[in-house]
Length: 192
Figure 1 (cartoon, one colour):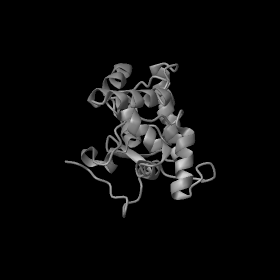
Figure 2 (cartoon, helix red, strand yellow; figure 1 turned 120 degrees about the vertical axis):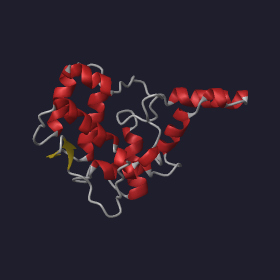
Figure 3 (cartoon, one colour; figure 1 turned 60 degrees about the horizontal axis):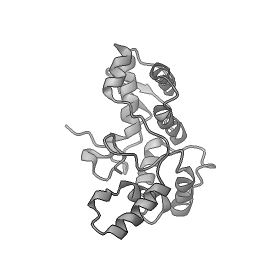
């Protein structure tokens, strides 16, 4: 059964369910960008990373493995995207198409340009609202152009000159740091 969240009439969640109990969490977009960067930071040992992640809870659940999994679900905002429809393809099996660190300026300017929202001055924005707005940015914004170019499969371009042109663009806008994604097995290993 697919659970779907409707942002037109449902209130954004202020917490997550772990073992039948509702736990309040941090929900501001800035905190979840930090959370994403923590996950991607290869200099932080996994054991330390999981301990730090628990700080997003107001009261930490007993089952730490399920607590971390619930945070991962909140981060991915899967309830906004049944069957991945409308979701930008920044998934595990492919190279990431954006980086909150490296694309910060493009993201910031796109929010100002498209929504009149200054992300520095806004006191609070729910992570899921940020995600909806981010995903809904028009294709002509620089961040969306970068995402489009980064997702191009060069092997599918037949024209040699066009392939060369796009390869050059991809190189110029490549995300320099390697992103590590945490999966269920990594989390399980920590708590084994």
